[in-house]
Image (cartoon, rainbow, N blue to C red; front, side):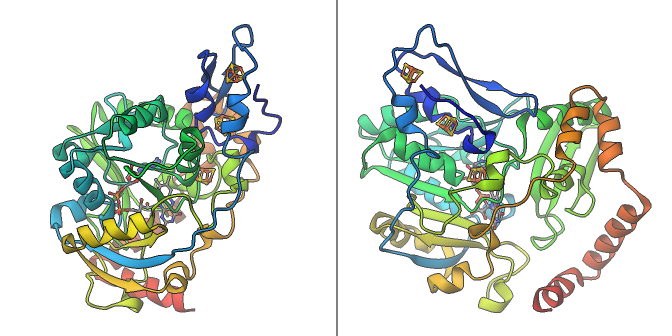
Length: 392
Ligand SMILES: Cc1cc2nc3c(=O)[nH]c(=O)nc-3n(C[C@H](O)[C@H](O)[C@H](O)COP(=O)(O)OP(=O)(O)OC[C@H]3O[C@@H](n4cnc5c(N)ncnc54)[C@H](O)[C@@H]3O)c2cc1C
Ligand code: SF4
Ligand code: SF4
Ligand code: SF4
């Protein structure tokens, strides 16, 4: 049966738990708020399936022969506004639903938990739009995907590269009726920390109505975290929002993300999607502040689907090399924050507000940075500044 000697060797995909024929693997939270398999050895029959399915211990770099690429912007203005970047994912999802299929993606439930769910109606697709910067709970999705595939329905599964790779290990064979979409993935933050963070926000703002990790009200180039309730709202970018600061400084990310084997642009998926902030350099005809998605197409199936859906978006075909140029997430993993052990030791006995004020205080400097960003945004100068910084 599976054993984890180093937490960097478990990405929490849940494939082992999904495959166990005796249901003796539960995903259990550790002291950092991430889930790991917990095995009830009394029921284990030593079948070895959990070891065989593990995407980390069985990883081998895929050898895609096809690597096509494009930059995409959805023509539907509402969908584009709700999506993280260019709203490409929604077009694939709509296509699958029109064909009577089922779409798996990540949603936030009534208790603000970030989870994989499946839907088969178009009006529920909005639940998947916008990246949730929290590790999602896959639950029994792999079992459900297999059931739908065996019934002959088209299935689209979207997730992080490790989740998509794990699904292919779980299924163990190719299915023509399966479309796989993975995102480019820097890392995922702790669901346990998210739970405490959101409770703190609820205490302050009351019951929350909208949570967006990448809201585009101030434009795509200045995407902000946005939380609202009847009694108020909060908005902040990477420079000031405490959730984003914890994430991007490497404090709350999963240990496996700092040694991620799934980063390569060679993937088992049909499509890889991610941000395109430098669209102004590639094609000036796109609206650069509404969002654009970079897309890699890894399979013939992906190429055929792209051809069938392309009327729904503005797009530009680019070379594979241009598409991946400058994308660090394909090359190296973020480091864990040097104060991470201390942070999590405090996390387990400190009040959450105090914890944030200790490690991520909203200092005068942070307030000035936020104000400067807002002023530049109002004057329409933040894009120009970003372009200049990228050139330099
Ligand atoms: C955790 C995470 C880290 C990312 N890191 C980067 C990065 O470093 N650089 C970069 O350029 N792009 C990154 N992305 C991808 C980017 O944020 C967008 O997902 C991508 O540009 C596609 O946007 P879209 O407008 O086409 O689709 P959207 O409509 O925004 O689609 C969102 C898609 O992401 C899936 N998703 C949402 N939250 C999660 C989650 N927690 N776990 C798994 N899947 C999820 C949904 O199921 C859906 O398929 C990341 C995404 C996530 C979820
Ligand atoms: S060896 Fe088989 S029965 Fe035992 S935990 Fe792993 S999958 Fe379950
Ligand atoms: S990486 Fe996935 S399959 Fe491997 S031990 Fe962790 S949860 Fe189980
Ligand atoms: S960085 Fe790697 S290990 Fe972490 S969630 Fe993304 S794909 Fe999985």
